[in-house]
Length: 355
Image 1 (cartoon, one colour):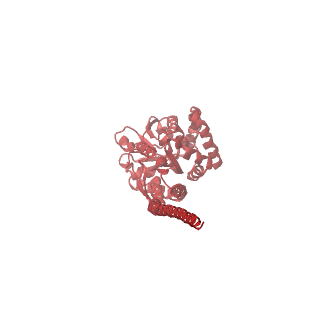
Image 2 (tube, rainbow, N blue to C red):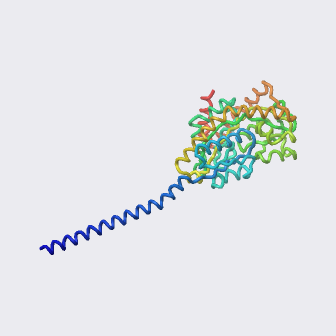
């Protein structure tokens, strides 16, 4: 009995010892695995991400926004997002930039939305004339929840993640010969953005619309391919257009907006906390740029005149007549395109609330 009991105890002790040994071995594996994994986890937490911010313009509101956004990202990500700003189409034409964002080669583009109509034609909605009368109304329209949801959601199924929308400036027209009256538009070839709304508007003024990217405008003015171009005074000043055309007529319509698009492919690689930084800082800087907008425009207007250019304003009668001529452009274009109609209604209803 004793022998049997001792044998049972011995066998029981051996079994318990085996279990303990196995548990210790397993625990050791877990500890070793945790120890080995810890550096990788820490490395993932510390990983940095390069963010190229691309735009076509330089020394204007879009450029200032890009610089502000880059600085905010660096600070709020504790340096984990390395933001680099590439103005003046350094990374290619606007279309090449958009393609780069779609496929992840470029991480961010700051651009007037109508230049993305090749991705979704609804991007051109905000270039309809008469939507807003001034910068304040434009900023309020861009901040309207329904408009933001619409515009920033475009392209989501085509590689884009919209993060910010803001108004840049009212439009001006640069011309080789002065446009002092509405009648002076007759027969002139005018560069427009890639927008059917602008095309119809220019035709109503008696001019010939010529869609072009910004990089094409100066050579076209120099070789007389166009007589004038729609953009804003800050661009004309920064890119020294005064050497090719000295006259800028401030027509105010349409408003020029900007949208900030992030590469969805790149965005999806970010940890959640950095995604939040990208989204939050983009929206915050769209608000912060507002007081700088008027200051940038004022400097540009002064520099244009100091550089030998002339600023022209239409008479009150001509301005009123122009708005009457352009009234209904939005309805004409949107009614002809079913995809635009419902979206245009969202924008116009929001615009009415701004007034």
